[in-house]
Length: 429
Length: 118
Image: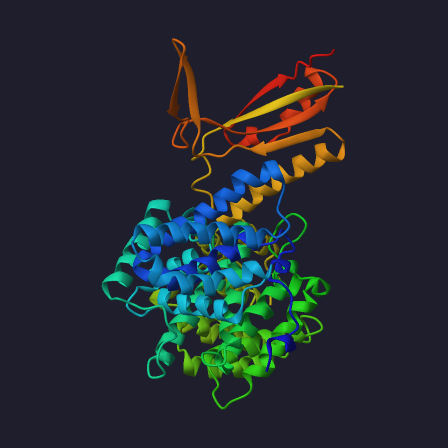
C-alpha cells in the first residue's frame, strides 16, 4: 500500500504544540550526511548539523525566517559538509553523492525529503540499534542521531546526568567505529534480529515517554511523538516493515490517543476509570486502527499484537464499565505465554479481578508477591492495596497503599495513591 | 519620531549547546518580538553582521594599519543590529527590553541616531 492510504497527521499534533521541524531535520540531515561522510565521521556530522542550525539561530532573528527554511538549513549544512570533505581530500570522490542527496531537494524547494532520505534514517536507526551496542547505548544513540535530541534532553528524559549520557554516546560511537558497522539495511539473514532490536528500542523510547516514571514532561511527549514517527517509518518500509511493526505502531497510537485525558485541570493523574473519554484523540485512534488492520495481515501473533489488541479494547470501549475484560484477560493469558514476565503477570491480575473477582485476583497476586523484580515496583502494592480494600481488609489495604506511596516514582503518582488510600475502601478498577 | 540603533552584543558560542528543538524555540521568540515591533510600524531595519572576516583599521602616522578581527572566537562580538522608531529613549528602552537577546546572555547597546536635520 502507498503511504497515502494511512490517515496522516503530523506527529507534533500529538501534543498540539509547535512544529518539530528542526528536530526532525536534524535527524534526517544527520542520517544522510553520515551515509555520505561515513559513520566514522559521526562526530563531524553532528558538528555540521549543529552548526547549520546555529547559523539559522544567529541570522534569522535579524532577517526574519526565510521563505523556505528547510532549504536554507540544507544549503548551509551542505556547504559545511563540502568544507569537511575538502579538508579530508575527499571532495572529488564524494561530490556526486552529496549533490545527488541534498541538492535536488534544495533546488526544487521541496519541504519534504525523498523516500531515499527516509531510507537514510532507517539505515541510521539500524546502525544505532546494532546488537553490538548495549540497550542503553542503542536508545541514547537513536535519540541523539535519529531523533535530533540533545544530550541534555536525553539526560532529562531518563533522569541521568549529562556526563553519563555523553559518555554513553562516546562509547557507542567508538563501538560503531571499532566494529566497522555500516549504514545499511541489514541483509535478510540478519534482518529479524536487527529489527527486533530496533523495535525494542522504540518500545523503550515510547514507554519512557508515556510512563509517569520521571523526567521532563515536554521532552517525554516528544519521546512519544518520535517513537510513533519512527515506528510508522519502519512499518511502511517495503522490506523491513510488516505486521509486527504495524502492531507496535498501533499499540503506540492507541496509548497516545489517551494522553490528553490522562491528567485533570490540576495536572493530577487520572486512570482509565476516571478519564473523560471524549478527550481521547480520535485522529490518533483512527491511525491506530489502520495499523492494527495491517498488523492482522499475516500468520504471526507477536507480543506487540496482543498488547495492541488489549489497548484496542480499552480504546474502543464506550466507557470503563463496558470494557471487554473477558477478551482482555484472554489476551493477557496468551501474552504471558509469549512473554512470561512478572510485569505482564501483574497486569493480568487486574484483568482477572475484573472477570473473576477480588478473591481470584488476590490468589493470583499472592504468587507474584515474592517476585524479586516487583519488590520495588509501586504498582504491585497499589494493586494489592486495592484488592485488599475490596475484600474489606482495611488495615492491610492501608499498609499496602502506604508501601506503594513510598515507592511512587513521582509526585502525580504519589498523590494519586494518596487519594486512593484516603478513599479506602473503594472501587478502583 | 526618532530613530534608534540597537547593537546586539553577544557571545558567539553562547548557543552552541542548545538542542535543535531549543534552537527553534529561540528563533521563534526572536521572530515574535520582531513581528510585534514590525506590526507596530516601529521596525526600521536590521541585519546580521558576518562573523568571519572582520578588520580593524587604525591610523598610524599617516599610514593605515589593517588587522584581522574581531574574531568569532572572541568572548563578545556585535552579532547584528536593529533600527527602530521611538518617541524617546524611554520608549526605545521599553521596546528593547522585550528583545529575547537579553534572556540569552546578550547585551544591547541602544543609541539614538543623531540626524543632521533635527
